[in-house]
Amino acid sequence: MQQYTGFFIMLALILIVIILNRYLYIWAKAVIVAYYAVVSYVFITVKNKIDTQYENVLPVPDAYWDKNSGWVDKIADFLFWPLLGILLFIYYKWFTSVYSKRAKILVLLSLIPVGAIFLFLTFMFVFAYGYRP
Image (cartoon, rainbow, N blue to C red):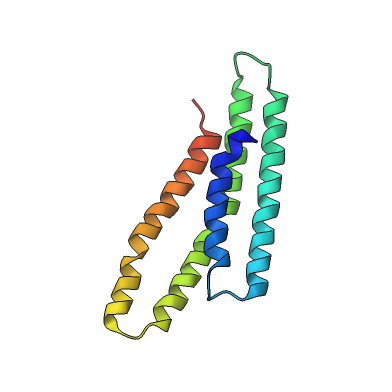
């Protein structure tokens, strides 16, 4: 479980954004949290199965790297594409709820650090769990 510390931190950040958001209904938050819980469980279960299958094989064969990298890429799609959609929905609602021009500009400017964090989390997830030397 220690190898998944970064994953759990990333998942906590995603869930904080979802749970503390005022533009999503409570039932939508529950569905999203359940979705991420299921995806996380499946990711960890299959990743552990792949790791166990090639545990004492040295040198590590290319088959392991192919399976592992493919699995992490697939899970990255399930984690980050829905998150992108959720973030776009939140920003749309936020942008349309403010009325002054200055507030709209600030909302748009806040997309820059959020986009950078999104790209950083995506890169770090794929790099940390699916890197192939």
